[in-house]
Image 1 (cartoon, rainbow, N blue to C red):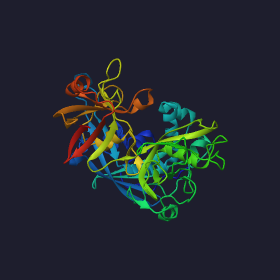
Image 2: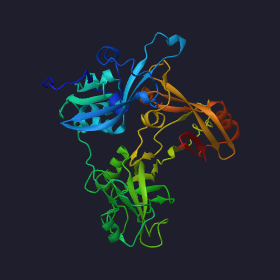
Image 3: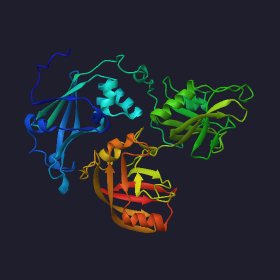
Image 4: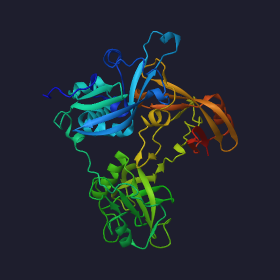
Length: 457
């Protein structure tokens, strides 16, 4: 049993740890808490994070070590006549750094929630299958507008969860670009090794002592490889004789397993092209930046035995202006057969923020459009906001128009559905369906001088 705390200083809410903390960096504050425990209904009346009155300080206290984070308390009100009797919903949100701390601290609850999403279970179903609870204490310091968060009860690893959920791949400290700019040339493999980009002087895949691949060399040594100078179809290692022919099936071990794990967890991989490669430098080796493993599969080689194939594409990273981009599919561009959807699905799209691929279930709602005025529609957990954006389509159609952004956390669990979408609206729908086929074009979402800009190029 956990001893009851003797150091409580302020009104306290003991919250059961759930998926909202991990997936959405927020939690709804129950009626009894906001009215009777914290008494904050009159303090937090605004629905937007942008409003100064929504801002709070969050202190996370873990084993006597504390960290300070940004936080917000917002109140969403239902304006529709049919929903007039519904009570406003108050949310307590916090920054992504704290979300990561929560995931690490409450690893059992987080692992269970990952399994829930994989199985497409309801929360009640996964809790019945894996019955346990962890708790987080939340205190409200009214005078300093501060929330104090302290783990109250957490489980160590146990046999409640499947062993596979508790065995996380080892992660090397050598992940990422290591501060090197793409295009940097190295005289030979020894010099490249000394840089730390790719330590081995022989193997083409490097796991750097972990279970993820962190670097590969493209040297044109496999006839099954395909390289167009940007995207790669890379052949795994093993199964070849001294003449370079495949004589045995490749196994999902060593570097092949590393690339497979990097694909699953969206760990970026450094790519270096050698002078032997079709699109390599004239001499030496050229570091070409971070790539993401998009797909892994096994198929017969030209010699007969089975080989592992890995599709890699360059990482698309956020900048001060670029928030997201995606190559438009026919469905996105409203050119598919049958009825048009009217929506653009806001997905991962191989887009990175820093050295991690975005979590599309929270990125658009919390980071890109987090400061907009969101309202619940009354249809389950769906909420929407409206934005105005400057638009440029291939430089031919320019203007400013309104878009509706919808967000539904439960949408991800349904086949063929998605969490966040952008409604094109009548003007853009007309352009896409009647004026220009934008299939295969690049959609860019930018913020320039504080304003949202949309480009199709």
